[in-house]
Length: 256
Image (cartoon, rainbow, N blue to C red):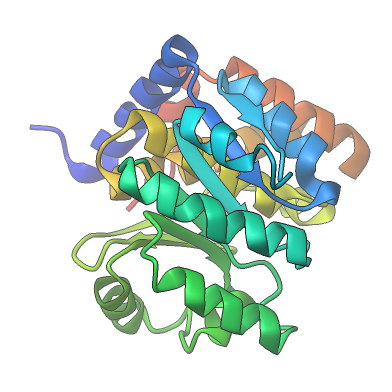
C-alpha cells in the first residue's frame, strides 16, 4: 500500500496526464491583469481557457465549460453580475467551481461579497494568509483551519511559504515553490485556475486541490533554476508546466 505522502505525487502525475488527454475547458471570471498569464498557464497544462464576462454570453460559455473560476481581483459590477449569473448554472449542472477572494483583506465590500459567494458553496476556496485572516482564520491554527473547511463545506487551499489543503477531515501540507513566485503578478490567480482545471478531471476535490498546488509549486522550483529574474521566470514556469512529468513530480514533491 502506498503511503499518503507518496501517493499524492503519483496521483498528481496521473492528473496531469488526464488534463492533457481531456483538455477541460475552464471559464475564468478574473481580472484583466491576470487574464493572459492565466490563459497561458492553462494552455500549458492542456486545459482550454475562456474569459468572457459579457452579460450576453457569459451564461452560454458557462454551460459549455467543465469548471469555473471566480476571481475577485477586479471588483467591478460587470464581474460581480457575471459571477452571480453563472454560479447557479454551474451548481445545477454539478460542475466544480473555485473562488479566489483576492484582496478581501483590503476591502470590506470585497470581503462581504466573498462571504456571499462562500455561502453558495464553492467546490474549492484558494487564498493566501492575509485573505484567510479576513475571513477569521489563522494560518498558524491548523485545527481551526480544518474546522473552518468542515463548517464551510468546501475544500480550502491556503497558500504561502507552506501550502495547506483541507476538506474538514483530511489535511495536506505542501512545501514546494520558490520566492520568485511572489515577484510575478497573477501567480496566485493562475494557481486558482489550475485548481479549477484539476477539479474538472478529478472527482475528489481535496485530491484535486492538493495536486494543483503540488504541480504549480514543483513547476515554480524548476522555473526558478532556469530563470535570470522575475521576467524570465514568468516564461519559464509556463514551459515547466508544459513539460511536467511523473519523474519530476514524484522526485520533487514535498508533501505531508
